Image (cartoon, rainbow, N blue to C red; front, top):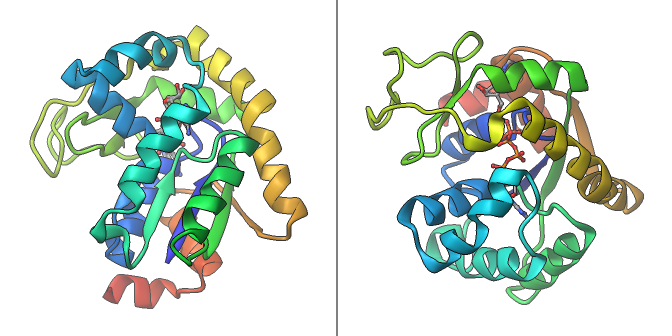
Length: 222
Ligand code: AP5
């Protein structure tokens, strides 16, 4: 299964991508996590993109596609992947199709999570992330088992730099201008499935499984 999750900032892409990847036994590829790891490591790429991420702007198509192309051709992606955070521009969508077709594969499902904007803002204030594992939590809706610690790695949970309200509002504008056209691009090609992202995490995941063509029961057994 090669799955792309679309949706505005805070729609739950990362949360659902984690569940889908665990269920399908394929890697979760989050371009946001990849970039934040570069920033944390203070690599050349990290230094180049840090300001851009903290402002809430997109990094260049060339840079993100070169990172993605390297990752997606690794052996663990042979049987599939869950892509979270890319494509963000129509140029990235076209480049992704090219990268995949050069390996004679294509996307199996492109699913858009729909969430009302006023609900998105509320989700950011409670979000906590584990920078090492890439897991995402919410203090109310999706809390960790131990307060402030990642369930998987035990590392401290932090708030993202780009979760401040003014940056969030800018990211939503960037989404409307640059990423909403990608949703339209896939919709016009008849490739887009849409689900309501407003239910609980489990309810949204059940709808995602249906959109991927797997039943919740078989997902639970996997
Ligand atoms: P990225 O990390 O991809 O951020 P984003 O797309 O803005 O999405 P978020 O991670 O903010 O939200 P999400 O939809 O994953 O929601 P989550 O599951 O966390 O990108 C960050 C930056 O990197 C970009 O601004 C850009 O600079 C750069 N970048 C990345 N990819 C790029 C690309 N392709 N091109 C160029 N630049 C790129 O959920 C949000 C919160 O809600 C959490 O607290 C969660 O626990 C909670 N929650 C989730 N589901 C539910 C639910 N059903 N009910 C209640 N709460 C829920």
